[in-house]
Image (cartoon, rainbow, N blue to C red; front, side, top):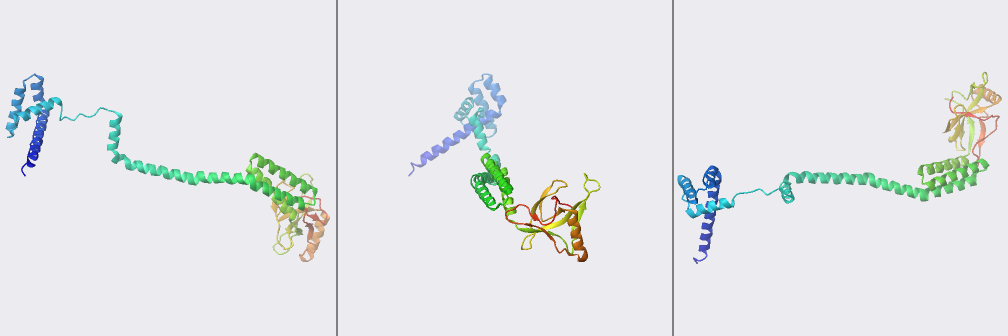
Length: 316
């Protein structure tokens, strides 16, 4: 049973010897002047060993001479001296890895932030842009051709005026050119104009002079700049469908050439018609013959039952 114990004793003695040798080297390193004065001066090893014995004796440490020799030899071989590695890519990478505790957390946070920004840009910008582009492609390839074709057929079927049919043909040609050129805005504009033309042709309404409580006036006159002393007479009218609802119609002002879709405007009439309506309203504030025109289906503009030179105003 004593055989296994021997290696353990030898291992412990060997470790003690190594530690003593390391201590000798450390003593020599801290006594740099001693090394320089003895070794650099070519002193014999025996003299250096003697000095080392004196140093350890002064500390009350008995170091075997063999250990002292091992220490001197180790010093000469720089066995226990750390020499930093020379600069290289491997050394730099090792230093970066060792310092990972300082830079890894900020790097991870930066990567997460960049990833979040990338995802936000993708979902908030790239994907919607792709969806808009695809929707525009489908609209140009399918929706707009179908809608403009349908509206043109409906207008052509409704129109009882050659001017309305010619206008529908022009708008359809504009839409076709815009679609072929990939101009979504122009194609939509032509489609919308066709839709309004179809709406105007289908509309049925009366042109009625306004009167009654809350209506300050039923007509006005203007003195035109190009005819000093002359007068233009206008009745304030509105478009009313058979159900009594107001209808928006396209009206152009002869004063400033502005066009707008309105339910009420000033319609120019002759002086005689203007005075007749004024007399009709004057006795009881009621206009018995308030309807002065009617818009039938298939026509763009109303047909007036009173004398009118044409023209209208949008402000009075």
